[in-house]
Every structure is written in C-alpha cells, then in structure tokens.
Length: 279
Image (cartoon, rainbow, N blue to C red; front, top):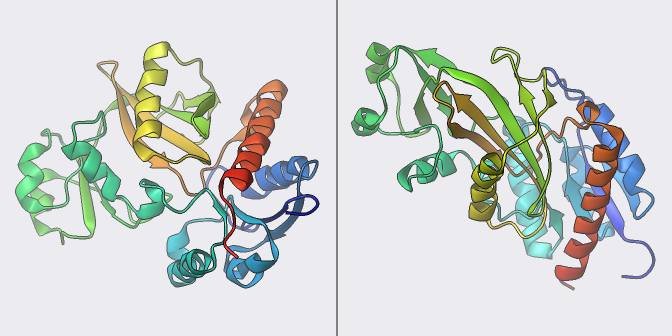
C-alpha cells in the first residue's frame, strides 16, 4: 500500500436525526483522521461506485439503511465480491444483521430485554401493562409502537419483535473501539434519549458491556452497547450497534475525544495491516 492509506468515509451529512448532529460529528472525525489518512467523504448511495479507488471504506453516520436497503445490499455484495475492506467489517452479528440477535441473546440467557417473535412465545415475557412492538429490520425507532397485552393477538408475526415495556431509571451507552472501552454516557431522563451526560461506569457495568462486545466477535471496529437500568438496579441490553453507531463526541471532554480519535486511528491502521485487500 504505497503512500498514505486512502479512506472512503461514508456519511449522510444531510440526514436529520432526532437529537443528534450527524454532520458535525463526521466533519470533526474526518478532519482529525486526515493527519494519518487521505480521506474523501461520500454519500452512502455513492459508495459502491467509488470504493475501488480506496484502500478501505469507513462507514460512519450513514443513516438507517432501511431507507436504501436495495443499494446497501448491492454495496455489501460488491464489496465482498471485490475483496474491499469495509470498517466496521460486515460480519457483525448485531444491528448490521438486523434484530435477530435480540432473540438469540434472549434464548441464550444473556441480560437483554426479553424478546420474542412468535405468538406461542408470548408466555415467556413478563406480564406488563404495555409491550413494545418493532420490526426486525427497524432502526432509529422507525416502526416502533406500544400495545396492550390484549392487542398482541392481532399482530402479524414473523418480521415483528415483541418486548415488555420496561419501567427503567435511565439508559446508558458504552462506547468501544475494537475491544477497548472508551467512555460511557447516560440519559438521566428516560423520555429524552439523546440528552446525554457523562457516566462513570462501575466494574460491574463494564463486565456487563464487555459480554456483548465479546459475543459479537468483531476484531476491528466501533461499537455502542446501549442498556437500560431497571428499577431493581439491573442492566439490560437495549441494542448492540455495530454498523454506524452515533458517538455523541460533542458531549465528552477534549481529552476523551482525543483519546477516541487516537484509538480509532490505531484501530484503522491495524485493520489495514490485518486485512489484506484481495487483488
């Protein structure tokens, strides 16, 4: 790989995310990564056509892929066929593969919000006043609704997930580069998911989050472990984001941001070294 590595940085700068500024985060990240890489930014719909000219594709805040599922699937197929390096690698087992992992983790006994997708399994859920219903292919709360237990029988199952609505104290997110913890943020008010504050995790918190990082077996990349703290004090997994996790870097202090960029730079360099491009 002669000269500086060339990265195609995939982002939808115009995407309007509730409570988040995708464009600001990716402008910051790409500007800092330029000290180590040659970088070009592109919209996710342009990635497949441009990626051959780069040493790796870095997927960042590209928006929910369900808005362009056909093009995203074509990008994945072309990248696999041509041996294109993609960061995060496309073998993630969590959100980048849909919500099936919530069912798998529930069945395996992991500390996750109990999740089922068949009417005969509803009995496995704790009884509560309301249930959360969301599509397996959902993202960013798209398609999420709340129903009563009496309404569960009228649902169309198969592509639908059902969970109990948890009365939690707060949500907390743990951010990782490769398998290294970077920082944590929490939303003290449950109804304001993206109003986040720094959070100092306990050793037990980090053991909880690390279980899901280990389960996903991604050797390289950025992941966000989202959890909720129940009234009883336990943590339950809400989501394991391994495709394009928003990082809320504007809400951490300067040294933490600097450490994250350093960690991401080192991760990308290891990724390029460990993942030779097919020729």
